[in-house]
Length: 117
Image 1 (cartoon, rainbow, N blue to C red):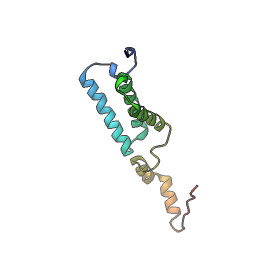
Image 2: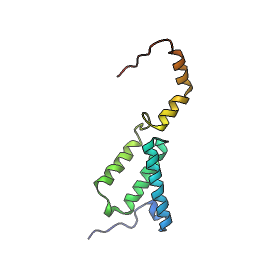
Image 3: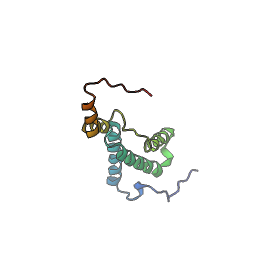
Image 4: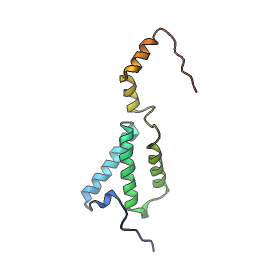
């Protein structure tokens, strides 16, 4: 028979209330939606990693390889610049950057060549 260690650390063990569990689920969904949109990716990736870890640690008997893969991807995303391209952060950071505006105004008369490598 499988037994589960009752001393597992998890945010879900702070309170057994259904409202607190709902709050953690909503926090996970909101953080994953913000991560998918590319809005404040570092912050919301950290929140998604912690809440997903808590969910896996709370009920390890219902997890599968997909949960492990998602958790591994969230861990890797903590160290990879996922907001560098095609994200909300990259779009508005590049348009509001003063150094970018200076480069654009200096290159108006000349054709710029960006190296591929």
